[in-house]
Image (cartoon, rainbow, N blue to C red; front, top):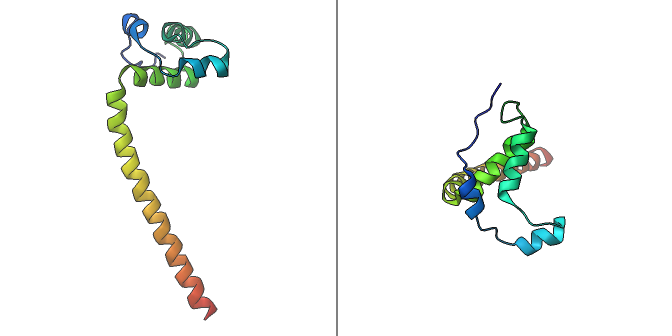
Length: 105
C-alpha cells in the first residue's frame, strides 16, 4: 500500500536554508541535512510503499520547511479553532460554577 507523499524534489532540499543550525548541532550533535533526512524517510517507508507514521510525519515536516507559506495559512485556521474551543471550554466552566453555586445555596 503506497502512501501519498508531499511534492518534494532533491534540488529544493539541497537549496533549503536551515535556521538555527547551531542549536540543532548543539542538541543532536550534527547538522540537519534535508536531503539526507528525505533519504531516511524513503528508506524507512521502503520507497514510500509501506505506511510508516514517523516517515509520514517527517515527510510533512520537510514539506512545511520547503513551503512555509502553506503552513502559515493552516496555522491561522488552527489558531482560530483553538480560540473557539477555549471560549467554549470557559463557557462550560462558568455554567458548571453557576450550577454548583445554585446547589450550594
